[in-house]
Image 1 (spheres, rainbow, N blue to C red):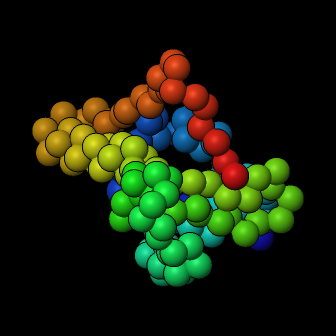
Image 2 (cartoon, helix red, strand yellow; image 1 turned 180 degrees about the vertical axis):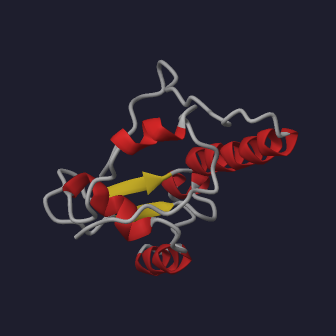
Length: 131
């Protein structure tokens, strides 16, 4: 299945547009492309609501105290992945919101610089996990 490039609304990481020609997108049926193909630009509200219906809140359980809107176990539903679910934490949602605000702020400056963010882990809090 051939992929035709669509122009991005995000700033390019390439100074010369010709440099981008040597980078090709993996086909959508490749294992590491499947999550992108399945979830890119899709509203996941319905999936979250289904997860919440199947996992009723137990007010006595401390586990539920940090589960806010948007937090749930995202089921990739993709064969051959070592792990099939990813827990979406409140922290991930805050990072996502920060990155969007940063992008909008840098874009409004209009200096021709690609907005970028580096996200690193914090020693001592454990490692990210996929269920």
